[in-house]
Amino acid sequence: MIRRTLSLILPLILIASAAAASLMLPKPAGFETAANFVAWGLLAGAAFLGVHFHRLNVLLGVGLMAMIFFALAQPWAIAQLSLPVRDLIWMTAWWLLPVGLLLLAWLPERSLFSIAMLLRLLLIVAIALGVVAAALGGHDAQLAAWLSVELLSIELPLMLTAIPQGGLLMALLAVLGLLLKAALDRHGILPLAWLGMLGFSLTALLYWPDGGSMALLFGAAALVMIVSLMQLSYRLAFYDELTGIPGRRALYEAMGRLGGRYTVAMSDIDFFKKFNDTHGHDVGDQVLKMVALKLQSVRGGGRVFRYGGEEFTILFDGKEAIEAQPFLEEVRRTVEASHFTKRAANRPKTKPKKGQKTASGSNGTKLKVTISLGAASKDERRPNPEAVMKAADEALYKAKEAGRNCVVVA
Picture: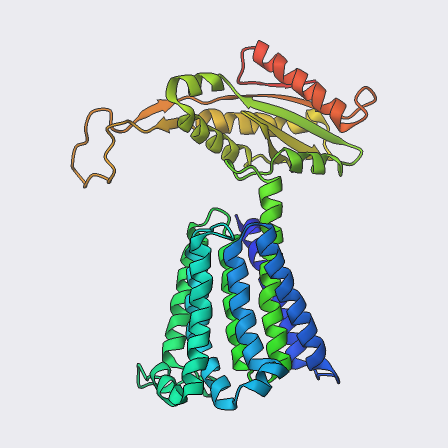
């Protein structure tokens, strides 16, 4: 769990560190031009990946950032928009970015040419055009006063005094909403990316009208999404969706990196077909998750993969089969001691109050779950991982013939 969390937040930390270092170091000649090229390249890359991976809300989020960045920092927009208009856009961005990115993170994905996507795009464009039209029509002061209304009479740090209090409140609510989304999300990758985009883009607004620093930070926001989309793509390709552990593709990758001594153990759940036939596939899926969780507790450096169906593979790099056997026995006993409880149909949805009796049988049925394992290591007869795996599979069949719930070493 800790390793997975670190893998999610480490890119954010690295990108933030690189951006902070770039902002603090002396800026060479041509920095702003170079930063603009990099930022627009990263924004275009994030938008492309959003379309490529069918994450079209990402496309809209990147488009929202790009629109604000263009209006505030690009020479053509600066020449066309007066300073009061750009100041109003800056104030609007403090409301629009938190609300927009939060909504896009929570809204379900839709196809590019669907009515839902068209409405979302039109809403963003309408708000932007409305702000510019209000400013050009002489209503900029009135709109600015509404956007900067004081909610609380408190003293803020100097760098935050110009920011609309409503925008700060929206930013806080957006952070909380994205953290909640990350906690509820199966992978947690994209919600953290949205959070990173929000943090970098709002920090970019703090540097306005420094175009080079703004470009650097908007580019960092796009880079966070690019890295996260690649992370998500990797996870979907190499991890089993049901159990959350590495799948067969990851197993083959790992086998290609094995050293001169290693052991492959094949395992499957005893009488698994009976679970599905008797209790249904939902119960079968829950059993698979439970066994995967218990197998991950294997010691001795073993790495667990879901091979397919009810079969799992455990790799021990640098160990002979006889050395790995005690660890396989230990994890077998762990699974055997962990009875699976099937929820009864009449179990109440809410936990009964203390002292309150429940209906008969509402506690569910305890089902015994066991596994069989077969292990083999590399030797002269088995010179490659494929041969070792075949031998481990044959040892697994011997374990089943021996009565199941045991470990057989080839």
